Image (cartoon, rainbow, N blue to C red; front, side, top):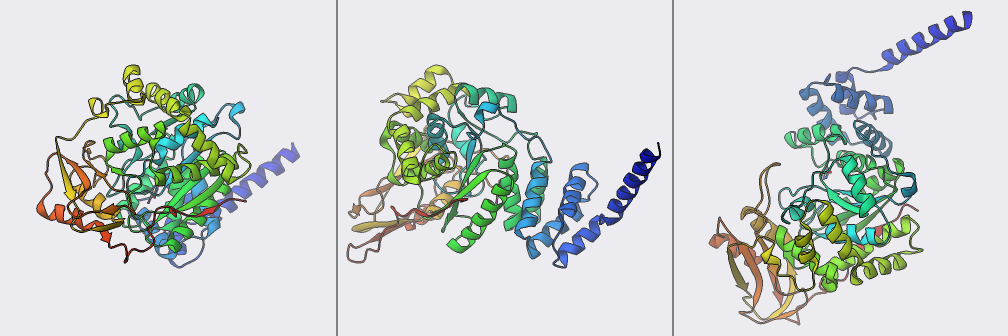
Length: 471
Ligand code: IUR
């Protein structure tokens, strides 16, 4: 009885101490604003207040700006990531999948259709891939928009459905569910409204909390740098990659990053339907070199981290064989069926001689642009290309806007190829609005042709700059 009383007094006192130690929201804002680091308890209290609705929007905005200005160290970023992840459901998997559940995240690019090839290739190698992808925003494309250009493809799947598809197929590509990381939905909207999107700790918390909620064994990040990337220079991308790798490993996922160049579009097609077509051609063994380089590098890293390959070169080789041998294509076909595509249509899309445009929507109009000079294709400005396509309806400016899946462009010549004046280099697919003379002019300026004598080293072949492994 006496012991129970002592325990009661101890617990009450401890609670009172805890309460006294907890800072008010204005004090927390002041602490960060003045450059101090937030403790784990501070960050827990902050995310708790966000979820309970006891923090005002103005206070959240002020805290975001304080974080944007003063930054967060690695430990703070890890705590933010963990508390965000715990704000919602954390997925769980059958025991027999232990060590095999993986995913990839890309910081966004032009013509980036890697997920469409990588997810089924990993499944073909025996991994489980619950790939949660995003939609396109501004000039960057989104995997979900690409997949929705396939009639019937349903990106909305519950956690139970994801589990069932992974059991039957091994991979799925789905949108964010309502139950995962609700804190990120609130914070992301506020970051957008307060110009605090481009903060390294906030980006890290947002990306890694969502991957943590997938309960992954291993995660690979494709962190891009270059003119069409979030970070223009390698140093900025490296800084983000280090934070992401630390935060991912801190949440118990083996996390690695690949730093890759994002100047020219990846592959030859940009635009939703066209990119699905190019992904299917890649899964049929006819993929462009740069796309295959990314797919095999990222996949190879995941195979090494899950112990399915002894080193990076064996990992790359296994992924390459899964693609060339057709096993990945079969996985893609069954994934399409599991996600709502009619069986006959999925089979037709995956057959050797598909007339893609009998299934995918083709734009009503097309025009070919021609080179103004003789020489060698030195570069194609992916950012310029994506910006014009965005204006023609291929992308969205605000979340929730529809996109025109049929708008896009095909590069008719690879980098390094000789071109003659008057030869076509780009086929533009458009509907309404048609391209204006100014837009045509901007597209033309995306092509950089040099005489063979002037030619510098072209960029294909060293797309992957560095691989950061967790060990
Ligand atoms: N993708 C995310 O999931 N979160 C972010 O903050 C950014 C991209 I920037």
